[in-house]
Image (cartoon, rainbow, N blue to C red):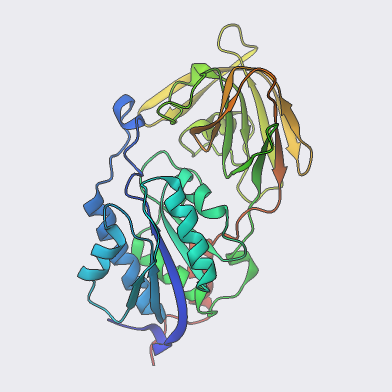
Length: 338
C-alpha cells in the first residue's frame, strides 16, 4: 500500500454506509440500478485504500444490519485502524443521525456517506462544520457524487488531514428548510415536493402526477428525478444562491417539458409558472390533505388546519468537492513520492 509522500496523519474519518440505498420501490417501476450489498462492500474497500494512501490511519464505522463497513474493514489489507461506533441499529434513518452525532463527539475530521440523497440529508442534520463527501450508490441521486471509491477516499483524506485547505474544495451548499405548523422542522438538500398522497406509505415519490408544487435547490438538466424537471425549465447549480419553485399542472398546463424523472422514463411534465427563490424568503403551503416529500421521499403530512413553509437557507453542509480537491492536490504536488 503506497502512502503518498508518506504523510501519516493522526486524524479520523467517519464512514456511513446505508445498506437500504439503491433498493427502494423505484426499482420496481423503472430501470433504476440495484446496488447489492457486496458491491457496496467493494466500494468501501476502495474508499479505505484511498484513505490509507492519503495518510489517514483512523476510521470510525457506523454499524449496520448488512455489516457493510465492518465486512469491508475485515477484508481490507492495509494500514488502517478501524473502530465501530456504539449505536443501536434500527434500520432507519435514525441510524445515520445517531451515528453522525457519535462521529461529531468523537472529533471526526471528515465523513464519507455512501448512499443516496436521503442518506445524505439524514447525515447533515447534526454534522455541523465537519466536511462531508456524499458518494452515490444508485441512479436516482443528485446531491451525492458519482465518483470511484478510491478517488473518494483520496479526496477525503487530503481534506481531513489538512493537506488541502482551499475553501473552494469544501463549499457550503445551500439547502431548503421546511417548517411545519406543529413546530417540527426538516431540511432538504435537493428538492421538496408537495404531493396529493395522504400518507407517507412507501415514502419514495415515483408518480409525478401526484405532485402540485416543487421546490428545488439544485436543478440541473443532467440530473435524474424531480430535479430534472427544474433543470429543463431554469437550471440552477448546487453552488448558486437561488432556488426554484414550480407550480405543476397535469391537466391543462401552460407549458410542457420533457424530463427524465426516473431512469429509463422521459416524461412529459406540465407546469403553469415558476418563481426564483432567494435566501430567507419563505413560501407557505396550506393545502390539505398533503404529504411533503424531502429529497424524493415522503416525510411530513399536512392535515386539516396544518400548514408549512419552505425557505431557502445558506447554511447547508460543508461538502467536499472531490474533483476540485484532487486537482488542487495535484497542483500542490501531493501525488509526488519521496
